[in-house]
Length: 413
Image (tube, rainbow, N blue to C red):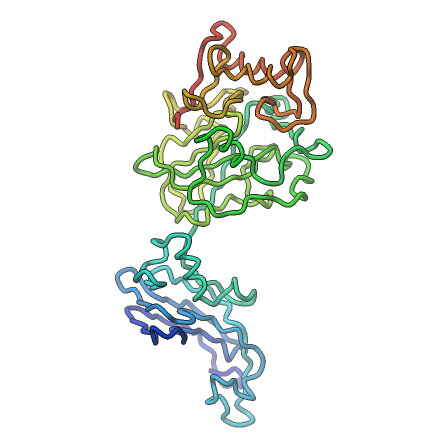
């Protein structure tokens, strides 16, 4: 319909497309199965377009150039576009074309990208990349709407690390970031740690290149970056089964953020569902939610309070009480993974105190300006004795009256 005349009434345009089979010219690649164009944009109102529903999916065969295409043609329909010669109905028939900027949900359709018809949520990473190649939408041109075919997990969470936590301010120190130059690496440190300590941080279903712009470390105040952390999504039916990992950043106020230093952490290859969420750090013991969390609607998960129970002997035993009513991850795991798993020891074989002494060489020595596992309080130096030393945190955690005590991560895997 046209808005060129005040006597013509515009109505919302919508549509329902279900239960169709779109066959291509296979084995020849070409053609477009379904396309949406806004070729009469003046006063146009685009409503809801339903493409596939549960039980009435559309089937898109393989070998299309595009399975679904959102039009990006702009300007006048005269002279008529090559694909639409029928638009040339005379000099007064022209309308104004615009990009199709309305999102369309295509989750409930099957697409054959070479391995048989599949729903997008069931596809793996490489299959979804192949699907993306036969869709034309927002990622291809900014003026277009989005074809929604996958709903990834977004993690909004908060955690405190005992080592750098300051009970007076209620914030963690950001000494590693504030050093000149900053001591926090631009790229995640966990791959290297896993090489040194096999099995400590095993990457699963993660294709994100986890490095940041140096400008992320220029932010000061409550939102300043403290360090990198490690997140895990675990199977809702078996918390021992690791499904996906991400490296992220933690701010002074405990917010866990993505690589831009402010956004929620995206798991782009994990579909929204119920998962156990575990948060870990390179020299702290990790903690995991006591139950699987439904990530539909992106809930906020606060590991700093008792009201968010964690897996373990008690709802808070996996965490250290660092201030009245405030919990943090246990500090002092300078050997990220040992024969006993993920533990903090002060004495005996494989203890976490000895690596500190090894770094300083002699008990009264101090090694400054470092980003190391042995820097338990994360102030940028390794220190064995004296005020603010790293060793005493480990002793305080295992208990000064029982230095042979062992603190084990819950769960210890």
